[in-house]
Image (cartoon, rainbow, N blue to C red; front, side, top):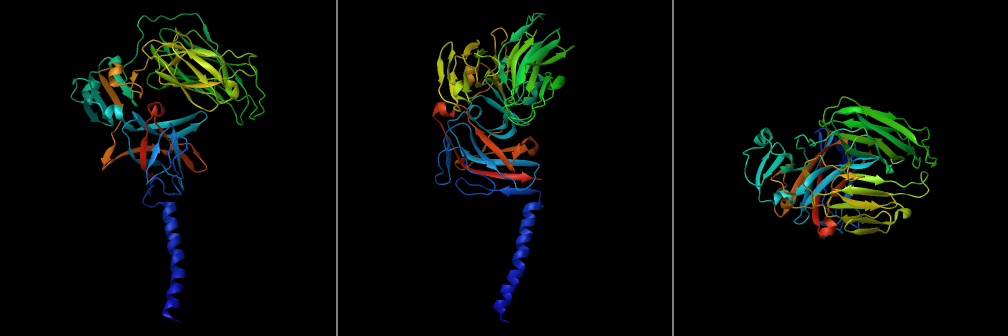
Length: 465
């Protein structure tokens, strides 16, 4: 037997052992850390390319331009991990705020967002302090440290916040309770959140809703009230109607009543947690202030009213984004200063508003529209209030906000040559996983209106067990 033959036999014996050992290391990750490097344009079994093609340009020389909001990609972990950190190599000189989020729930669809780049902060000439993961900008230097800022905080309307809370309690001057019950006569589809104000009164809401059974699965309804510290103080729930199919056999009007007595004065958040199969047809309450947070879904009225009534809402937002998912939802939305035609389903439309400190009305004649605003939304002018500190958004400069301070949970990206590098980390318990895939999304509000873009060179991942 020749030496060559023996070497071949040895290789046949060693290679499977080496391969098995390599696979074992990949699976068990004995170091506790699994690293994936991914350059744009290179195929990877763990990190997909950015999508969709309408919002990203094709990769060119290892770089890809993001031109629309949002742009997403999938990560495919090969086993269970407890944490994941993503490192993004990018360039950006025009998009005010870029964030990276992970899909955390699908019903409703929501993302946990973290900052990648905030040009409003990084380009600001204001005095800057950093510490404990926070940034404090000061128009004029008043504080020597962030600790001093919290020890003797300024008035709440002098501070704009970004991704953090400025916990100076909101109190509404001259507020007095009333026994008069008012009705929000509007169809709201699925999950919603709103804030209300309580002083020397019982919190009371009566929700009338229908389970439309258009999608598979049980449709539990749970309404929870949270105080200013984020603690739950009241809850009521209703189980599914017994029909978990998608046969579109709607229930009649059902009632869910929530009350809470002995609450201290302050702002309370009410979370209406359910699926998109549930349509809240009305809300009755003696509470005078009701402002929805972030978004509302004015649902269709099929199976409830023969002729849809739509809704009129009030907001101080500088813009709202609107989308319908059905041809029946095509309509012209009207505000006091401008009109907007929603001309096709599944397209997002932007309605610019004056946003100058007084609520502006927006009429939705048909309903069946999802509405996302960079401010609060109410369904009557008298119910509108905004108890939250001023928010730093992509649509206004620091000068426009009229504040003297900005408090942000933010760490500026580091510079590596001509590239910026930002790292964001998520607990995998925050992540909705489907088919062993995690969905991540770049959020860049206003990118289309500005005609701007940002470039991505690489997305690297560290997965920890």
